[in-house]
Image (cartoon, rainbow, N blue to C red; front, side):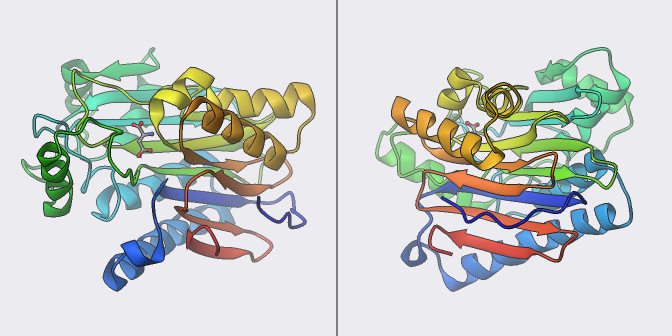
Length: 313
Ligand code: ASP
């Protein structure tokens, strides 16, 4: 799917802002340039940390925080609405060096869900906190609460209204996933992954997607790969995409690109759709997706710097 450059075992970073029916004729010029600017800002923020010798964990958190604040993407500000008009956010982070992980689900009041996931990883004995308890933990940790209405945007409300007008269920629409994620390899050779999302428009019943599930939407292990996913989360959960990619690399000897393409083909075969970003131990920095487009960008110490949206870029 993607050409394979010669990777250098130095730092590398890949980010995504979601995959889906993202084609030139569907995006306005302002949406196109706004998304590219947001991706570039996140890429440069994470790259600066890595080129200064910072850790992969710091870089992926910083890149995802930039995208959470950007209303173009379905995470933090600009998140998708649930069917009842609420916004519930999920996020995760994993350190491939220690395989420590933290994640949160059903967040409604904490400004940076990925920042909270990191606190779960570093300041709690748990991996996954949800709902009201996660918010209590956030306040105990002194994390910033979001002002009421901070996450809501007119565009996402319009998408919910459109779905309700069609009386459609989540997934019955022409999906444009907007989840954000980042994966990195730092100069010390450590990998990390982070993902943050509002989930899918029109979700119900406290639905939780793949993003906060370690091994599904988010996974990192220095021995094999760091992975962040976007797409129809239910399928990514059933396959355990993040861990499956890692297992193929570690146990079957696949290259990261072959592993990513193989597992995305499996997602597609089950009826799912979406994409993944991957970094590997040798500095590989790549993606694989089954959709017409994916908001994505990557940078390496060797000078590669790419921002892309459509499948043919
Ligand atoms: N994978 C996310 C979920 O199912 C949605 C997305 O990628 O936009 O919650």
